[in-house]
Amino acid sequence: MEAFKNPLSFQLKAEDFLPADESEKQQLVVMRESTTFWKDALRRMLQNKVAMTAFVVIILIMLFAFVMPNFYPYTYDQQIRGSEFLHPMEYSEEEMATIQAGGSVFPHILGTDMHGRDMVIRLMMGARVSLLVGIIASVLVLVIGTIYGAISGYCGGMVDLVMMRIVDIILSIPDMLMIILLQVTLKTPLTNLFEAHPSLAWLQNLGVPMVSIFLTFSLLYWVGMARIVRSQVISLKEQEFVTAARALGASGKRIVSKHLIPNCLSVLIVTTTLEIPTAIFTEAFLSFLGLGVMSPMASLGSLASDALGGIQSYTYLLIAPAVAISLIILSFNLFGDGLRDAFDPKLKENKK
Image 1 (spheres, rainbow, N blue to C red):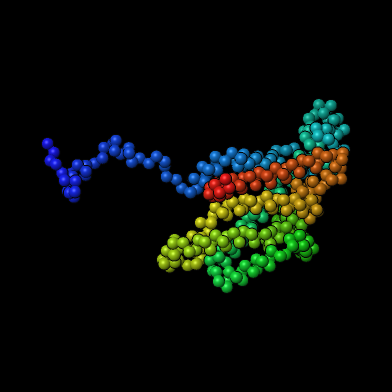
Image 2: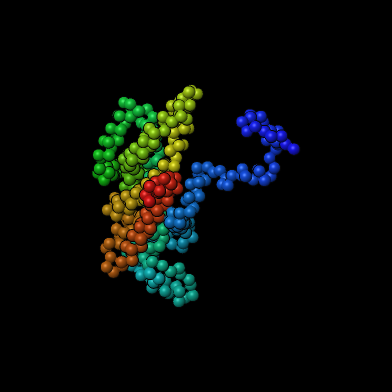
C-alpha cells in the first residue's frame, strides 16, 4: 500500500522519471508539420484559383510566343504574293491553284495584312516582343531600384536625403519627352554601331526607338522600386539580426547583400511581377504611336496601329492584338495580386 504523501511536500516520485510510453508520446505529437515562409506562401498561392488560372494563361501565352513560331510554316516578315488582306481561313489565287493541283497549303487562320503577311505568326512575334520588353525592363528596374534603394535606406542621414532628392528630380522628368529626345540623339550613333558590329543585328531589327525605350526604363522607371526597397530597409536595419551582424564585424556591404535584401525578397518579387504589365502597356502604347519597334518587326501595339487603316473592313486585325494585350496585362496583374496575397496574408485579411 502506497504511503500517504503530503500535498505540500516537495518530495519527487521515481515514477515521474520513467520513459514515456507510446500513448503518452502520441499526446505530444504536433498536429501540423512545421513549414517555412516560402512553403507556406506556395501553399496559399496554390489555393488561390484566380492567380493559378492567370499563371496557366501566362504559360500558354509564352508557349504561343516563344515555342509555336518555331513550328509555324510562315515567318513574320514573309510577304505572300497575291495574299493581301485575306480574311480568316481564306487562300490566295495561287494557293488555291496549288490546292487544286494536289498540293497542301497551311491556312491563314487570322488572314493576312495589307502586305500579305500571315497575321498569326505576326501576332506570335508581337507577343514575344511585348513579353521580352516587359521582362527585360522589369529586370532593369529591379536591379537598379534595389541597389539604389538599399544603399539609400541603409546609409540614412545626408546620403539618404541627397539620393531621395535625386529620385524626386527624376520623377519630374516626362518619360515621353525623354524617349523622343533619346531617339533623336541616339539614332546616328546606334546606327553606326549596328553597322560596325554585325553581332548586334538583333538590336538593329528592334530599331533605335526600342533601344531608347529600354534606356528610358533604365533611367526613369526604377524610382518606384527604389522607394519601396528604401522603406523596407529602413524598417529592417534596426532589427536584432542586423545588430548582431554589426556586432560580429560584418561590413555594410555584407549586411545589405546578405541580410537586408534577402529579407525584402518577397516584396521585390511581387513588385517586379506587377511591373511587367506596366512595361508591356508602355511599349504597346509607344508602338501604337509609332515610337516603338520598326517594320517588319512587330509588336502588339504596332499591329493595332497598322490595323487602323482598315478598321471598318478588317476589324479583326485590330481585335486580335487588342485582345492579346488585354489578356497579357490582366493575367500578370491577377498573378501579381495572388503573389501579394500569398506573401502577405495579413493584407488580405485587412481587406476583408
